Length: 121
Image (cartoon, rainbow, N blue to C red; front, side):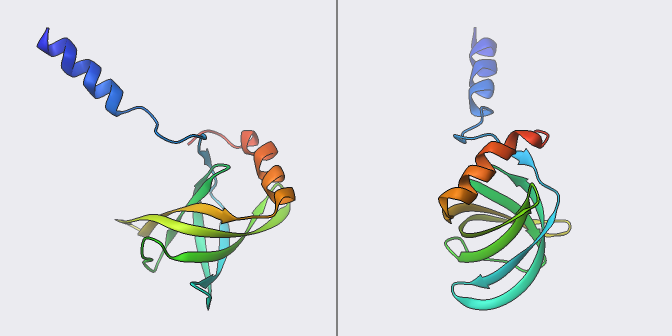
């Protein structure tokens, strides 16, 4: 009885919390500015969803930083503003997750329609 309860609890804890699926996105893209300060940094994308993007960077960011980025998606360069939600140290630098805060509707639609073309991460 206790074992069964623990198994169910472990299963519940592993469920995906995100509203939208993440898809593999292993392309380089540019961070143009951090909190309105120009930076021009190339980073490597890890995954993407209609709500945000995760990437590997060789510099750290702070939770809450606002990043101006430009990334390629289905042959369209999409400019967006993301808010850093988390930063973790990894073998190749820093794993950063950001939420899309500002993006024009036409680009959001390109992202929404194209996400399914990527394989699930």
